Image 1 (cartoon, rainbow, N blue to C red):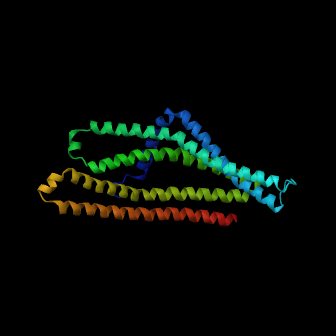
Image 2 (cartoon, rainbow, N blue to C red):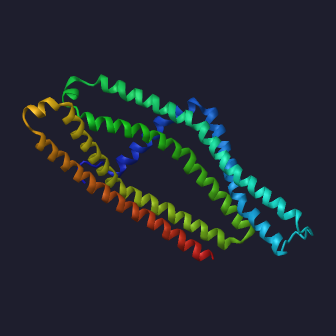
Image 3 (cartoon, rainbow, N blue to C red):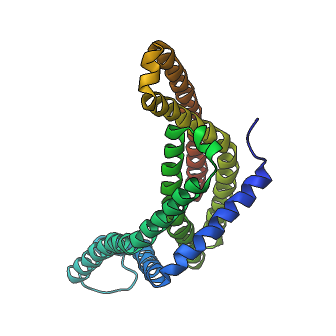
Length: 279
């Protein structure tokens, strides 16, 4: 589409953004490492929960392969361990977020300051033709996007890789290679599908963001020039143009939601097929 950079340029731009985030992570590397430690501990606790539930069921059904002849003590101990693991999973995740919030908030502050300084260093022509509403929305969206990107990079991608490795190891060692291969195939298919569809969705996200900025530009700039609008009795003209911007935003958000349906639906289908095959 017109105005959209080619995919290779997008990839270069994505890596450039990640490269700029590294200094903000290294500034608080102690906190980042500690947050990662709590994250790994939470993942280990979460992975152990199903096995504790299995032990509880085996104890109450009298099918405990360990041969421990205790009808009350062992189930109670397992229930207590189950509760502790569930609590550990939640509390370690909260501690992780609390430790990392200083990193993200400082990064948002630094980047917001850099953008502000950069805008003041632009020439007079830019500011005479500025779109205040859209510009402020772009800055707000960009700064908050940095926080999301940092959290996603550290606490979504890395934990997913750790959990995948743990699950594949457990399935391979305890339940045979068929379960491990099925899981691995489904994970690869899930990742490939998500990457392809997300790349396709970028144009709808851009359209939505551009329409959002345009509608805010129209509203804020019209209100900033209220006296001029009133002087020329252009209220209806401005209202109609604003409504047209809102119409474009409505259509863009509708397209974005449909593309999200395709993504979530495809992911759910892959998971359902994998679960069916394993069952």
